[in-house]
Length: 570
Ligand SMILES: CC(C)(CO)[C@@H](O)C(=O)NCCC(=O)O
Ligand code: NA
Image (cartoon, rainbow, N blue to C red; front, side, top):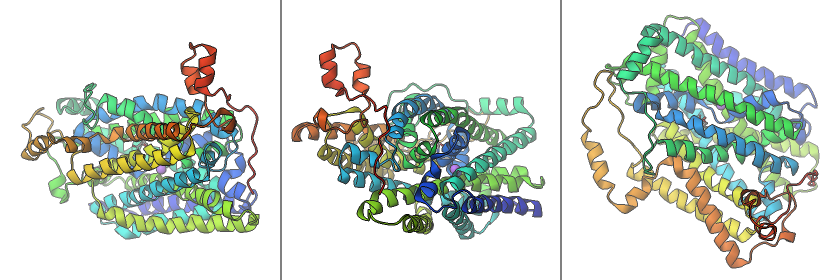
């Protein structure tokens, strides 16, 4: 199974070499990475095309390439409706978050929190972000290595080390410019690999109409599920509405993305790049969903998981790909390159953004006199250290074990949701003060971990997979599902079974509600104390019909800054 020819190894090697080459190029050209402005902010000179491809790459890792087809194979196309969330999920960042953050000329998204609230809130936000990205990184680097190992015997820790080290090296050498340009190259490789699998798969299954017939008869084309039950894992509501909050936490306030917006040469360019993410992200989603359908058409009736010796659907995706591409020299290598491209582009964004926040939010404020050369050297050391942390986290992921897509989406919701809440509290509610913000974040995180860990322990977020057969549409439910359902009558358990697609929204609201209550109890912020340009007059815009005096009270009137505020970077 999965014999690699020389061509395959060459393709894989070219990917790694090209990524290193781009890193080396940016280490030796331009300002040679001698300032933090260049290393962390790409000199704020980027154009929209590379920025947009890089924005997609940040959160599209091997987790999505493997996890989404596995999800579609097992549960049908319901997940595809997350594409509906991309509309508001990108329009809101483009027209609300980018204008506020870009005009403040920040270096780190969390600098906003200090301007709006206080130093303490900034540090809490930064630490939460670091926590989120460090666990997520582990999943990203581990996933492709694990899946490949299960099928081809590709050395597991060898692959983890290779990815981690190559990525560390080019990120440390070439800074954000290298990260963005490798993202561009790697995103193209990612699309090419997925497309190749689909084309070959459709051909081998007997053409488009045959694939369609099988997935239709196998009940894989899901109807719009309008069930309002919030414990239902994937429905139109959880995906299209809950998904908007997930997208906001990733594309609105996550440092990895904000850093890309800030690296754009103008605000317009940043907004345009956000718009350009829409078609590419839809393409990425469509490719991975179609891949799941082709995989189903290929295997319906004969589930290869017995042959494989693992019930992991994630490993099965790789099995399917290798099985199909066998005998086509170069294609297995292209797919492996696709997987590792997706992983590399995500971890490199994580390294660079982590180095940025550690430098800007945790170190620089304490050493205002640090020389530029020393700060840049320290940033490089930080990027490298996070590379090593990433390897350690991969080992931790090894000890977990769930569908990788669910793990990633849970992390985004559990930790990203409260951070989103913190930013919303600051931007939309002028009365919120810093005590409210810290308490809100603390409560949000506690509730989020209580529910998230509760759901992992009680295993309540699983849904019954559809039968892997393309002729019989409905089989009777198995016994485990019945026990799960009766256990759900327990109130706490039903709380634990909140769909993880609601985590972002739910945790965001917890932070806002608690934040506002505490703010009003401890004395709400006064308009003249709020830093100009940190509030987006959302309430005033939404309630445009109200009398001017009331509106003035509501939206705190401070208009969105038109001027550029220069924050001393010292
Ligand atoms: C972030 C979304 C939801 C955007 O569609 C998608 O890219 C996804 O499911 N990502 C999973 C995480 C990952 O690929 O690492
Ligand atoms: Na990626």
